[in-house]
Length: 320
Image 1 (cartoon, rainbow, N blue to C red):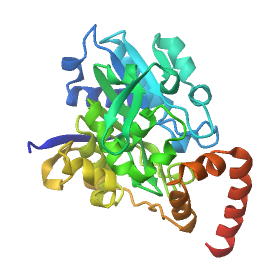
Image 2 (image 1 turned 180 degrees about the vertical axis):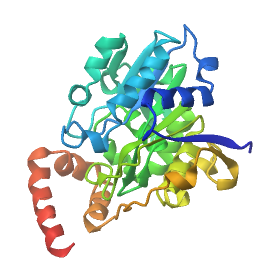
Image 3 (image 1 turned 45 degrees about the vertical axis):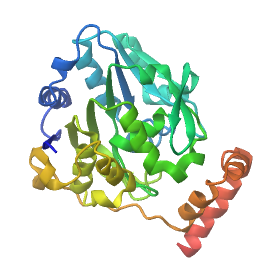
């Protein structure tokens, strides 16, 4: 395998736009994107909660800086995301300032869940569907947030594409998650990945943890290498995350340190974080979500879920 290249830059002492520009240059974006290129941007907007957006979601500043750079290359720019289990994309867009960005730059923001769907064969599921806009894009950009994850150890570039599955009950497919994430990566290859580690999340991510505040960005055209390098930056073993390891085994990208060339001061930018712990509550949730009946009747039903969650919170305080 030819060596993948990843760029790491701190934004603590430099303007964000300047760093994004350097990442664009490093990844030769201008050679691939021209006036007729259809670009699709997938940020991580995994919550509509205003109190958690700065820690759990890709920052608006990163999304806007990327859009500004792209507008110099093509007018065909779309931001896309799917509905979450308890919120719509429209709510997430509103909370995270995406609609204002759309007005400022004349780009589009779509809800994959409401777009025209195209069925795609899949070995694990038989078939599933994706938005035609996602499948037919020319240049796919993923903008994940640097976060730990209680189920998958880490959530970055590869895991961000789970939000391209256009259904809000995708939790029922978590039993196939590692395989499905690499299937998505093979179906629509990422052309540019920029990991937003300005804040990021440690502890019980991807939503209920607390800030990392790494003040850095990690970029590359190999999303596996970006994930693996980002994991090492925060003290996690890339091989401990099943979906990252499987994607590497399937030849989607590089995971081994010797296969990844790093441009940046890796040692100086390393951050010690608290990893996510898969406690008894998470294990039970993962077990119950294997049942479509339980998922739809209890987990997806707010009238059932919130009382149960209240009991779980109290039990966590009592027994840890």
